[in-house]
Length: 121
Image (cartoon, rainbow, N blue to C red; front, side, top):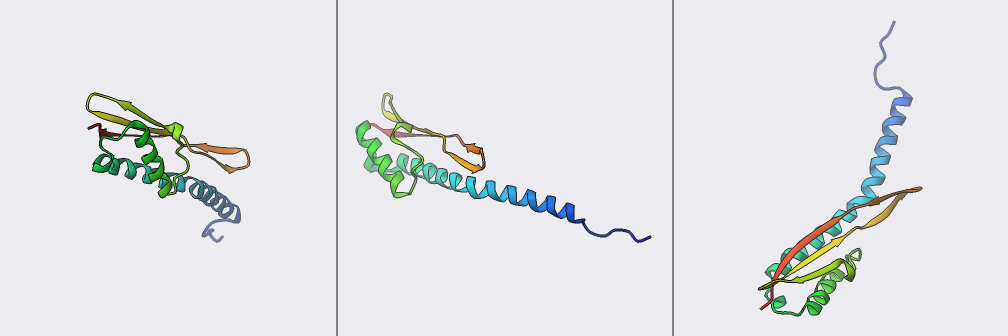
């Protein structure tokens, strides 16, 4: 009797189904993390930028929204940006949850929160 070598057709179909499922998830979720990387780097640059120091909260919010639009990040809305005043600086908090469809009735929700401090004077 010969020993079987390799996988059967059913085994190959199962492997292909798993790879396709993971591919669909990756194609939908990876762009969300790429957008978040843009938000994170924008917040880091905001702390180092001397042109935003001393701006009013309204002007800060406008600057943040403008920079997000330049980076093609549309998942962060004005309502997701909080600016809190402390003694010598502003604490900027961006907290948002991008949502989307995977397939059928299966959706994803991803939560992100980033903070930055900008000098008030």
